Image 1: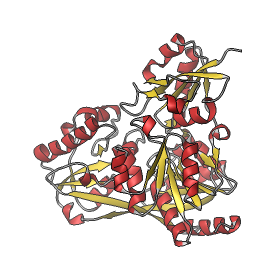
Image 2: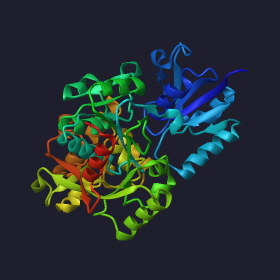
Image 3: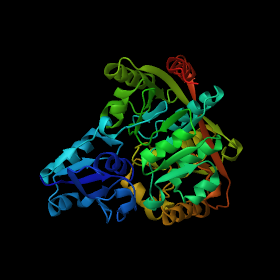
Image 4: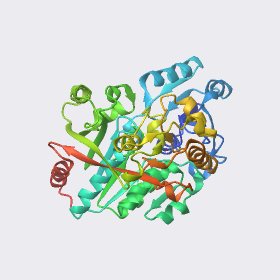
Length: 448
């Protein structure tokens, strides 16, 4: 039988993982291309031979998703696999319709075919949408476990936007490691908080190799999810935590693959309950109970802390937010905006000052109006972010930058006004708490 020809639709993450664990050594399939969406400047590369394996001596091209119908016909493709996340059900089925109309079959690979089994206990932190607050939950878990004398290592969902052959396994323990690996702004947003709190975090492209390295220096592996993807790892001693967003009621059942996470969860943290309306919290809780009645529900609040609130009060401020949260995450604001409002800043509309991809982001994501997303996937984009901020300072009279992004923006851009950092941590409201759940998990599995 001839091999079935495959295209994998992705965004430089889940797509590569699905290839590695399901297609790389599979004699029944030939992957002719990856397609790229969501993020700029990831198309036009190749998945390198050292990652693609002996069946692909020339590697695999990464092409633009907009050309998918043509590619299906040109390569006589049999099967298209969707392998990226944070997608509405309408979006997923629209892509399925495009693929079917071009003559190919459409596939979503599931956890059984894509999870790698760990020899160590695994605690997975996933979400219903990007920007739900996974990092605050993961970080709190790390601190709870460290307080119990248990060593954890975090493994972060992939974000390999550079030279893939140099990103097979990446270990981050210091800021020097961030410079060594030439990480993007988005990567910094996910790695810096682990480093700041004294933890090691791994990431990269080959997640079996990454797992085996992480296992060597941990008692428990924490899977730190990205977007609303499910965990790449499983274990006989598994605790699956999903973070739902009370500010986006209904999304927990209407977005893929976040709705999978709700159903897989042992614990659902309904986050941002302080900012949300009671009826929205109730809707999220009821939706979770309807599809996963056995899950424990924790009510959480993302508590905002600002290092210098006096620099916000009465000042004209520019708000800079975590990029994915306010772009494809569809949030019009995040922690920086809330802090600016709380402390009485006059928020400046950034749109007239935006350049390059920052300006294009406002066109693609019209729900963004009063915040700047931290796009920085290339040196060019980093320069455009800095130019946008400088324009707002010089032409818009901005007196301070309110940075809701987790990265230390002052280390990466140079501006003539102060940068006020916004931090947020998880507080639980009522019981059970995460510490209660972790203690029960540790006792159940006799983890020492």
